[in-house]
Length: 126
Image 1: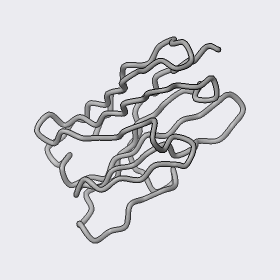
Image 2: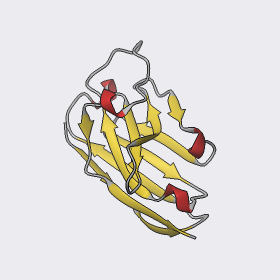
Image 3: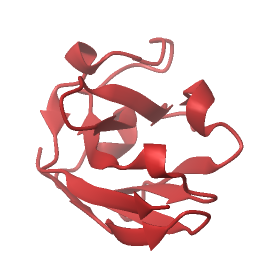
Image 4: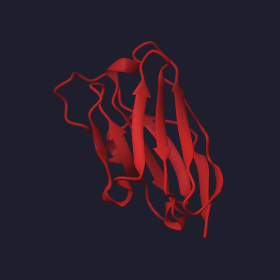
C-alpha cells in the first residue's frame, strides 16, 4: 500500500486547508485511516482517525475545527482543517492499517498503523 499526501501549505491563523491522502491498492475500504502530525522536536501525535465504518475520532485540540472523511470509491481520505492556529503547524502524515474487521476498535497510536505517507507541511502564521 502506498499513501500520497497533499494539500499542505502556508496559511494565516484563522484560515483553512484541506489535506488529501490517496491510497493505492484494492482494499482501501477495509482499512482504518488516520492523520498524524509531527511538530519539530516532538513525537507523532494523532490528529484524527476514521474507521472503515465511517466512525471517527478527534484529538481534543482539533475538535470542532477539523473534519476527517473518506471516499472509498476514490481511495482517498481527507482532513478538512478550519480555524487554523499557529500551534497546528507541523508535518501531517496519513496512515493506514492492514485490512481489519468491523469490530476492531479504532487505532489511536502510531505503532498500530502499518502504512505511512510521506508527509505534507502545514504552516500557520500568526
